[in-house]
Length: 444
Image (cartoon, rainbow, N blue to C red; front, side, top):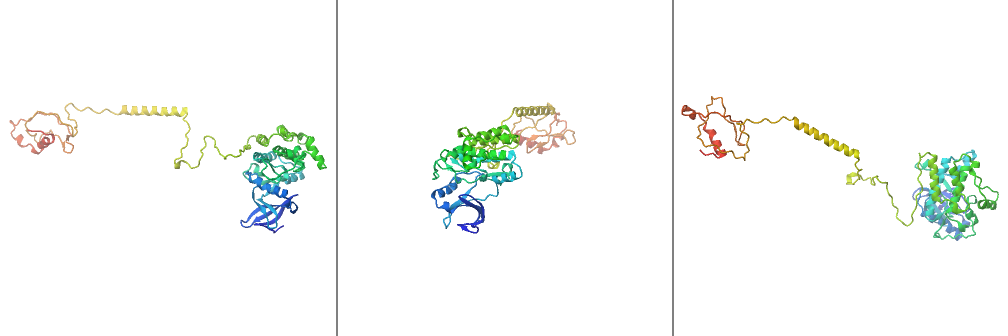
């Protein structure tokens, strides 16, 4: 089909092929975008049940949002009736291919890498189970390892092929008979081997246990020559102990794998419990350096809310827009330091006041400066006899006409006797005597 067009998509090359369909690399020409295009084989395209199961994958993936789930962007029919799904194109390697490459060199995945892969898968499937979706065909071929610099270990697992996934609320429109067996026998749970009627979320826990067993031990839990024998081993036999083929494994990890492979599904942990235990073991293995996020619960039918830890600023707007930011409570040490500062400041002020020299006391006969609004004390009325001669060593007071006050003290001296010195009155300056009369309202 290379070069063939399916609607807006032109097929570039074949990527893989299975029993029901094939996956191609294609290019969405209007956007010039590379995509993965999955088609259904012609013999299955004529069956309504096969068509319904094929498009069921698009409906299932549309309900799941997780970075480790491949996204579907389109689905429909081509002009010739070919049914197709359009998914994101992944650049990476399947886990099955990684296992084969290591096995050819006689190697296995490091324990930390195996834990990291299973933690991510358990996290994805825990969310799917909370949405009522069971994968039912979990195996290394359906786990793609793609480069992701922000993911722990630099790789992210993508869970593929939800084509035979079961919706437990029966909203998919796909009905599976109780006598049908769906899945890959090497990773099928006992209840899945017995028939599809008892399949639920615990089936995926068993399948992940098989994958984990293979990553740690270098082989599958059960190996048989025929399909019937393999199914019987899943239903009635116990797998070889992991410590017998990998004696250096930590005991808690070995016990977790054994609980995931219990025959009775009620004795297995849930997928979310398994994810939490896997994350705990991975954190312990890395000595707490890499903290792994445990799976978070999903609540259906409620709006998603995000809560921030206490003490963290919930917005990056900042103080420029008047944002109110809580201040930390004052500590006891801060209060004592504040009181000490106040005491030191008070001592400095007291010393500064005591060191200032006291103002000199004016002589008893000195005339103090008076305000313009002050009324001088009345003095006995006397005749204006003038002032002493300019040749005298005594000086007359200097009067500030703007302020109306005397700025120089007038010392006491005897009144001149005009009878003995008749010329003294003639040498007086008449200009000076009018100012005090007008200024203070004196009358002769």
